[in-house]
Image 1: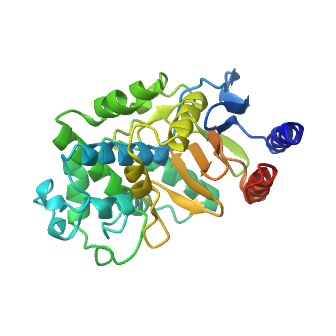
Image 2: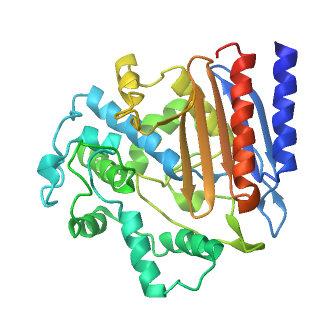
Length: 348
């Protein structure tokens, strides 16, 4: 099987080279990194290579760390999953209908502050004449414009809107849920989110190149807009929904910790991967045979795929999205590659 696995890993190299991947990829089991490689540049204009220790924003993969932090506080009996968030946000009109668990599962009905602000900016800028790719760049670039959201500002935004549905009646992805969870962590722990995550996760796992400060990113981020390479301005998001910066090496450590159920109890890990409405756990989707989450923030992207049966994970960290005409093609080919990987490991 070793030779077959080696050949299969080489196929992934060829696939990503063929379709101009720009970033780093790791395949790890629960003990060792089986393969890690990088392609392209962290700064394209200066041709600075993207390497395994390049710090880059991971976007919504941050939510997994936030969920783990919440579960740590649950294990310490400082909060309860079914506790109403009125204990933390008494001024929010719907807080007496929503629990911490609903925030984690994204079943609260709270609208997404990111989408609300994005739609407002579109109206202000009158983007009707933009091409589809120009609109996409505008949305990502301006989603992070003056992105100094604090809890007061987010609460002000969402308080002006009704819930999108009755709490705990369905799933709907909303960044607001995890932004609020970050504030709960701060209120309960009496420390800021960044310090709590660093002390209780990064330091414990020796993720030495990870932080909750977006400005620590070494990689720049880019996007092809109508065949022209455009560079995003620097972003400085501070929320628990998407602020973490990491490397492919550190993310591999994170994946190993998940596979080995480190830091938390078995019971807590079971809660994390229990998908409500078969849709979303505590920071996790299910994609075929894999638990999965992606991250996108201002052109930075990250992906994590975990198979507990195979004891294997695939991680991707990149700063340039492929051109639209090949993006879906490559995603399909990567999906086939992952399925074949499980077959090689005799899990399917």
